[in-house]
Image 1 (tube, one colour):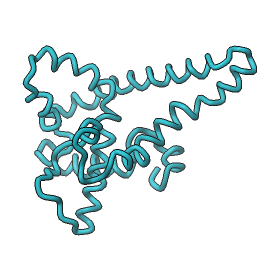
Image 2 (cartoon, one colour):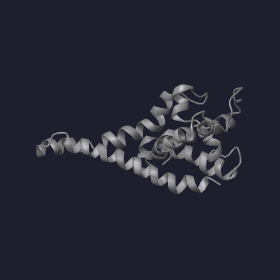
Image 3 (cartoon, helix red, strand yellow):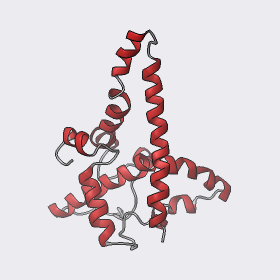
Length: 185
């Protein structure tokens, strides 16, 4: 799966890069289990939500969104951050002042505050863009031709794209329930 978009597409096609997951999960998570340096430390990763000055009911209302989008919203950017951080450490690069390596990088933090590790454009073009475009829009594209041939127009393609997105939400939910609850202490 390591070695470019084609190998990734054939061997491990997901929101995150396999080499980033290897650094984040196999190295950082398992060597720093339940410590502040553990990138999967749930209580550290949800500190922003927990400390938000809003009633608890509003925090609970955000949970279904997080549960169904966590792979691309949280995990993909955070695994990529850990890959970049590992490369920095290997190169002997100094971490900029004010940057806390244990802080999670999410799509929200990329859009609203940025990160010194990479830009949103780099993240999209290298990490989530290939998966988003190929999996959700290119793979079902033969259905456009089949739909035209059968006289249904774009309906089959649109239906396939909708089903892929719904399946993504459901698999994110399943993954959250199976994985995150096992990392919550």
